[in-house]
Image 1 (cartoon, rainbow, N blue to C red):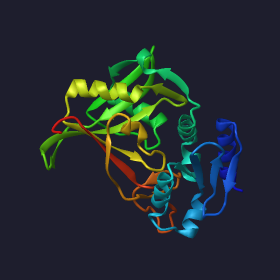
Image 2: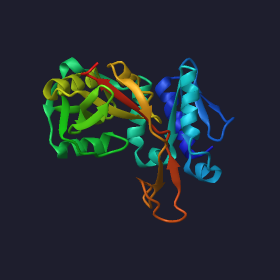
Image 3: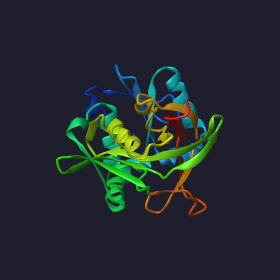
Length: 263
């Protein structure tokens, strides 16, 4: 068993208080926790590049679990070592072990691009992004969560042309979960900007989109799995730096839309 897989199993047991039962029937081991309908798969980069499963392999796996009303999390070795604190924080949130702060006790402020970038760099798996509308959720003086929205773009649909805004990023501070934080930030943006609709995508490796569905979003599509190459520092990039550079591939994204006008 690789140290990565050992470490992941140990973290899962700590978070759930139950043994993480390992299933080795597939290419990559899957950890199942008794009584919890969420499984975690450990994907090491050497095995992935040696076995070279089909590009749709992980997406199909997600669909299989979703059909059974369950969820599978894809935990990649490269992220475990390059962004381990963020990965563990995501697992804490998924298994209900984050420190909870109620959104009613938080206030919303506009934040600068620098503040947004610093927060995303430290707390979001994908990292920094830029957008026109930047909001922070503060508890006392501590920045606990952020939401980043793009400027509007005209989108043609059957009912007409709509001014659509993308929610580019949302994340909580490492180790914390703001109850109602996503809803509070979304409602603030709607009051401030009055959009026709809001569009976002969620990473299928980590999410089934339920948090957005509860807010009235509907699933409108999905993206194809995306391949990344690893540079010399183990960071994910979108181009192949060397002919033999290792690669990874995600499960694609789920597209979600919140229609606010024209229904």
